[in-house]
Image 1 (tube, rainbow, N blue to C red):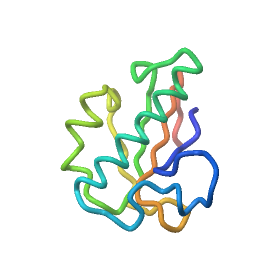
Image 2: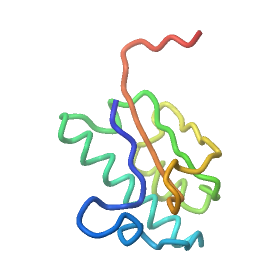
Image 3: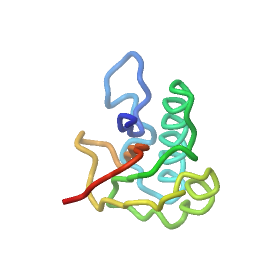
Length: 111
């Protein structure tokens, strides 16, 4: 399981100051936010020697439209090998617009 990430790079300064294109939910802004988050997910997987090919679940959390960048940013990277669960919900931190998490498991049982 890879911890979720949203569009706020780690670093110094306030969390609000680090949010990518704070308050902008235009298609271009959402693409930029998603591209950043996908890159973070890829870096975290790479640290464990994994790639999108190793994932069995990819989840996105946003109330904004994914369709303008779905094919170009998400599908083209191989991030939906087993599908994409779009949770129509805001990330848990005020000001964030897009979050993702991924996991890869051998067996998943849903009861």
